[in-house]
Length: 217
Length: 217
DNA sequence: ATAAAAATTTAGATAAGTCTAAATTTTTAG
DNA sequence: CTAAAAATTTAGACTTATCTAAATTTTTAT
Ligand SMILES: [Mn+2]
Ligand SMILES: [Mn+2]
Ligand SMILES: [Mn+2]
Ligand SMILES: [Mn+2]
Image (cartoon, rainbow over all chains, first blue to last red; front, side, top):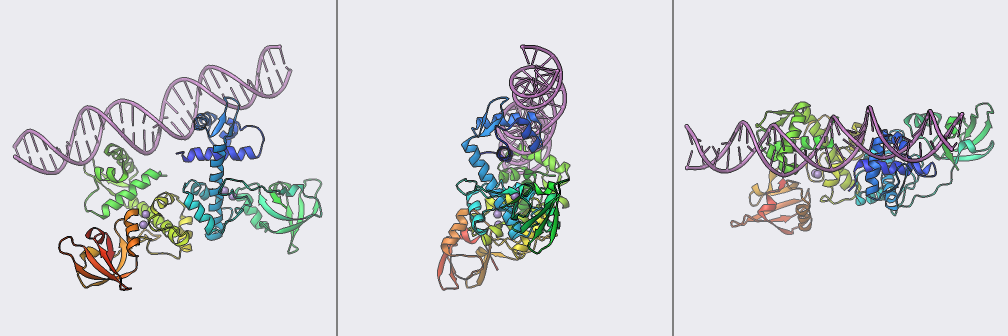
């Protein structure tokens, strides 16, 4: 079978592919996996041997069908465990990522299926990310960034692009919770910060930095 | 920190110590860990360097206080996860050991504490084994083997000494469930098999091989 | 008490995953 | 179009956990 390390590379290749087009570079992988480019090259040769990636020297990589299937399986487990940790164990959404990073590598289809049922087949994880189906489909979402919304529009907070503890705790302090409805006030032309008004009528000031990491519909 | 492998050795040393007195031998460890004696020696030197075991060449090993503390922590996690898998996810008690072998290595005190609370602080795992406390105490149990019970005595099934899938499924087929009360009938003098009668009045034939792996009170 | 047997350790090797430094290829700028 | 810069790969090394075969120590039996 494949190791934790190989699984992490597959997941990382998938994640980088999502936010750019074209093949994934060695350096991009080295940065995200916090290793050196030389180490990445070693691993890429190994994944290519196993036919989990398409790899041409110096040209970057992309997942094969089988590689993508595996990546989606790992992401599915990661997100299901995050739902478990938040909904059942009462963890904050800012505290679950590292634990899910370990749980995602427990490879048992029956465990995943039973966990999914236990959680009542959730479609989104605590950060609003869609959970791949058992058959390996990543559900499509049509969210905009809050930073792309016009003044006066009413939207609902659906997800986050940034997953750091600091960012998520900042949202908690602002009472910006997933699912909450907000209406956009005026956008400050100087720093593009914006005032939004929540359902309760409470005004919340949102910097551009925060707004472009919030997904709404 | 220490690796999965080191944790497994600590747990194994603890387990072997329980069922014998005196120090644990290299060969005993090699058998249980399914490795070679030479590999065990390598690991013992490493664990001794970390002061997790007392080790004198050729003389076998025993856990230090710190080593035992760690072993109990791992056993605690293993057994809590087994309770989760059976009680919450609906796994059979014969199917949870291998999954718990992986889950037990996720090292997060907060995770363990929250899981414990979520399960309502169980004292025994699905096999009747006591769950070490948060402070590292292994609860004492005073169970006898069914094979040591006299004819006519009424006892309650409290645990198993053998954890193999085959054995546990055999008990399922016989409707021998943990917690069930049985009264001993006559013991066959030839093969020491015994007929027991359950609460429902149903007679169940139990071989000596089975009886000496059942714990009762 | 001593020789044979059993247990254990040491020596030397391998595979996975990582690193640094050097070599090579591709990209970018002038 | 070429030279410098950037990206990537190769070479050689280290660590962890494992193995086999050989050497050593302890135990067991005459
Ligand atoms: Mn996560
Ligand atoms: Mn998430
Ligand atoms: Mn178990
Ligand atoms: Mn158990």
